[in-house]
Image (cartoon, rainbow, N blue to C red):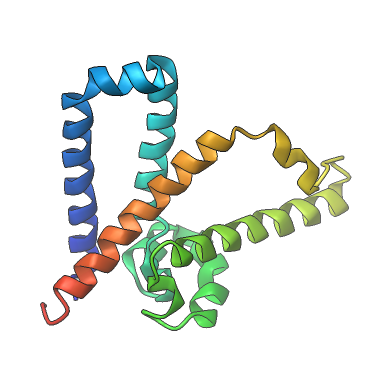
Length: 164
């Protein structure tokens, strides 16, 4: 299996190739999506892609992975996730593995916000009815940005199974 640093290099190289393809097809893409929307959603995609590469890889189920170390002190919040999921199990299933980590983060944020709200009476409303105001296309582009490096990671694991 490739090392964590190799996975990161692969993800960044493929992002550069993707960026080159976008640059090459810039005019038809901006004609189709609209320039402002394409730049906005493309930015969401790139930020999510980098977040997925450095902080949210399928190896979050390992207590000693590079992405786990990248969280610094906050990696302690990921220990339950690492204990819950077996390495190369559910976390290495394309799209579903990404969604497990996204749901885990959302649960962490919800718990932290609920505790802060209870302790400091911050007046935050924590309900699902606020989801209607979120730009659905931005969420879709963000999820694509999170899923793509995971797919590259899983593919590299499968292609280079005996490498090291």
